[in-house]
Image (cartoon, rainbow, N blue to C red; front, side, top):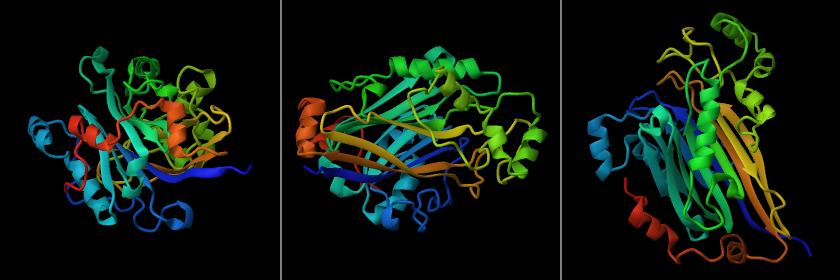
Length: 351
């Protein structure tokens, strides 16, 4: 019997450290691939957008306003997506770390058990300036979580970054049975300002010169994140298509010129995991379609990074409802997004 396709979704993921700046007059058209640059099949717009931002302004005035309204960044991105009929699935913010999800309305009935979560790591977990926020759900019967993180900064803080990662893995828990932890999920997307730098003694000028000579492969060999994955110290369960774009940190704000007070590095990353053969007669698959930076954005000292993925589920005979019963054990309510909204999020359109 040939397998049938339960889902074949194009998911757009974006991460950007916005350096406490407000969006103001910035257009998000390019970073959201709304200008015809999407890598989705037939150049169709993505089915789902997930955006993680770091260093979002946490001034008291903004925090007060956010109790009653969306954060300005969520509002800005929603304003770009609402004309294309996307709905907001949910958001979660912890200090300056923010994650949000938007989806085409046709997918809403196939999103269940939606939860948000956060884990603090900064200052021993007391402050929350570093850590992770996430949105998880049953998506067409499979368990998926999207984790947006901001890890410890500076060249000499590799051990702290690894400790941050392990704290998040150990302490980030959900209420949904069978999917209590991040890596219980069938699909995991982990992205953000992970802050990994380059090993070695090259000066900032040396690294910039190698970038200008397009010798990126020479630099990526000394990328701390890649080395941490290889040694198993952190992110070993995840996959990354290595960047082919220039390091995304650190720039003079308002320019695309590196600020050589810091050594350029690929701080902003997007990784994923899929448990391919987890269920009999069911095939889970991810295909990465793109991975790029957006150098024309000069708001902060980081460049935005985006990636697009095909999220595919095939089954011999099951429907997504039957797959849900297998994976989640029927723990959902009948109106998952409505119940989620009552506890945590404001569903669009609210712009």
